[in-house]
Each structure stands twice: as structure tokens, then as C-alpha cells.
Image 1 (cartoon, rainbow, N blue to C red):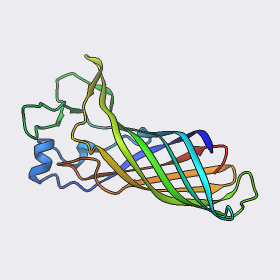
Image 2: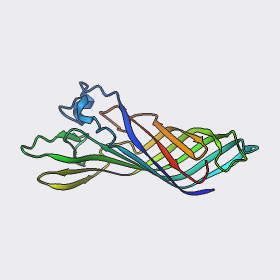
Image 3: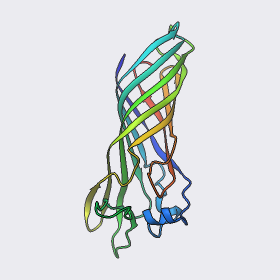
Length: 215
């Protein structure tokens, strides 16, 4: 058992949205592909794993690995888009709009999507007798969206935070992998479908470095 593992990496996504479709325009009226472009290097992923356990299947060379923790994603936008909280009395209301307020400039605009996540992998350890082994792991994770918000900082309003699910999917299933190169540990994840329930076809992925006392 390993406690308190931290991942530090970058968040990004693959946008395959048809912005001419009725569904996309219903979610974000007037939108096009540039609306959801991310600022290079600004979108970050931090994972905090409360614990991970490794159970030997074949002589510690093949293992079952699983855990539980938080997956925190921050997507920083280039454009001045705003997420609007759902109106309960309206079916499928518009969620995203472009802010064209005269004289207003943005210094921060991000969407945070945070999950409680359970990863499960098969681990292949090529050097089972080393404290910092060489090997890799592959598997999948299941996450539950426990919180999301749109945080902005503008020249006239200052800091604003809108909290809502913004019609993001409640559950996120991802393919995951790890690469262990002795003391250097890398991780990656790719969701199996769009992070949005409707309108946008945007599939998130993360990549980064893992800070852990073992693989």
C-alpha cells in the first residue's frame, strides 16, 4: 500500500464538435471551434491519490493495482466565454455565451472539472526486486463528478465563480496507463467519450509525472 500519491500534469482535449449542428448551437449559441481553444501550457491536471495498492498475481512481476483519489482538471480558455448556471424551469437552456462587453478584458477564464476516481490496472514489473522498478501499467478508471465551476477574472468585475454541472457528464470512464522508469514515473489518461452530455463532442486527456514512493 502506498499513501498520498500526487500527479502533476497537463489537461487537454480532442474537440470533434460539429459547430454547425443544432445541438452545438443550442448549448453555445453562435459558437465555433475557436471558442473552446485552450491557452498553451496553462491547462493543468492534479491528481491526489489517497492510496494505491498493488497485489501480486504472478511472482510480483504481474500485479493488480488499484486506488482511490481526486482528479482535478483546469481548462484555461483563450476566448472570453462564460458558462451560465442551468435554469431549472427551462429544458436544455443555453450554457455557454461569448462575452463581448465593451472595455472588459479577461486575465483568467477557466473551467474546473473535479472527480472522485477509482483506477484499476494490470501492472507489469520487469525488475520486481528493485525499490524503483522498471515496468508499466494499463487499465481504466471510473470517476464521479463531485464539483465543477467556471472562474473568471476581468478588468471590471474582478474574480467571479459560477458553480454548476453545466451539463457535464456525471461519470467519466477513462483509459489509463503508467510508465515506470526507475525513479521517473509518468502517467496518462484518455476519456472514452465526450465530457459533455449534449452539444459538444470534447474528449479530455491528461499526461504528466507521478510523485510516488513506489510504482
